[in-house]
Length: 107
Image 1 (cartoon, rainbow, N blue to C red):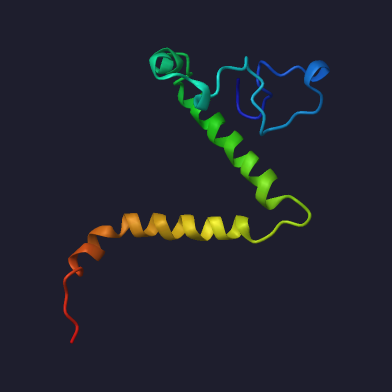
Image 2 (cartoon, helix red, strand yellow):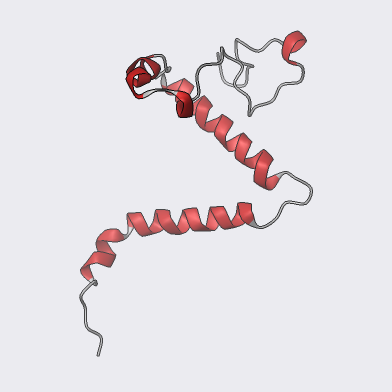
C-alpha cells in the first residue's frame, strides 16, 4: 500500500463508501475480551510494521474526529480534551524545570 491508496482489504462492492476510521482487515478478538493466558499469542498476531502503526493512529484520529469534532451539535468536550492533553504534554516535557523549584521558599 502506498500513500493515498485504499487499504488492500477494502472492497467498495462489499464495504460501501470508504470510511477512514474503520479497519477493513480480518476482525480479531478485542483486547478487553482476551484472557491473560492468551495475551502472548494475541500480541504476536499484531502487525508491528511502522506503516501499520501509522494506520492505527490515523484510524484513532478519525474516530476521535467523528465523535467529538464533526457532529453538527458538537460540544466543548473535543477542544477541552485537546487543551488538557497539551497541558499534560508540556508539563511532562518541562518537568525537569518544575522539580528544581519544588522546595523553593518565596517569602
